[in-house]
Length: 216
Length: 216
Image 1 (cartoon, each protein chain N blue to C red):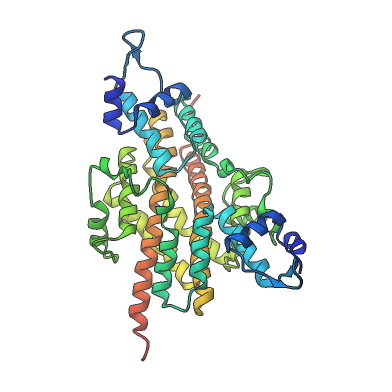
Image 2: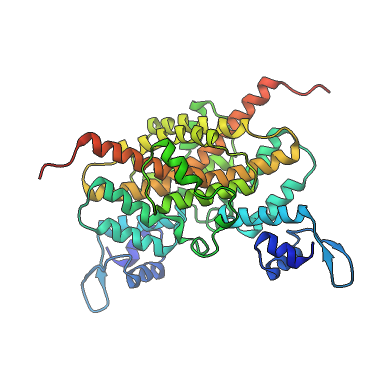
């Protein structure tokens, strides 16, 4: 199909598609003349993927680029693949995570590393995910949410079920697997966040019903 | 304390504090002269709260403003309070959610409403959270993640445990409760996202151990 039809099929304006082509996010089409090229189904799918990652996943284009590079790399083990996906998606993308880290204010430095050790989840001396957990926990501390190790472990029990569901659904072939892990991490984060709010409402209504209306 | 000391205590530059004061995010201090004012512990806590919401929660200042207004409102029921918090935090903040909704491309419109009915979670004819779930599910469909109703319900089982943990920890007094719900929703979303990646790694390592190394 021509670029105008690619635009119609994906609901993305032609100038945006040309921008993707210039930036290398979208591979060039097959030239049919000096000024025209044709595009196939792989282009349609790729454009939809870019839109899904930016509009729903909320990822900046620079991260989308890294994700697309990861998807295009030669086959890797399922574990390497997960590491690649996690690396591409690390919140290190946020402008202030590396320099003005809020961990300075943390009353419990290295809490994440200690907790991970106790739980038996794999970690190492320099683990960006553990650093990220420290930052997130420090913010909860500052906000005085009372998120102690016991409650953190209860959350982790529920999240282990989620991670298990994540992994059993990953396809076996390397390329679809990378795609699935990266998209699944970003897009299902969004689903889980909405589910959490819906489940909170459900739990709050049940709580209100149990307690009954307040006496007048 | 003076504004320079407030800056030192919160690690926020004086110009930023003055911006918060101008925008009404931070209440004025007590004037001691035409050009000076003093600030107390409530200012320190409020500045830390703003930093937590923007730096860790990743919320834009406009949303932080709505959140602070919600925290300052007179006492409400625990259910209204949850609705206020959810309203302030709805991803409606993203620039493209209202106009160019990706739901257009959804192969299953109203899937969220039908699924919520079946699950018995409260929803209504016009429910922003259900719309948000539809958008998130449509993105998963486009990405062909194979997130069918069965797997969605399995995720929901785990998320119900999380929501229960969220609610039992909410304090009884209205003001701390609003603060706790809003901050807990934003900040613990960040904790849960990191935990999910850590749990995926744990599960992947266990999977690799079970399967053993590939034959050379």
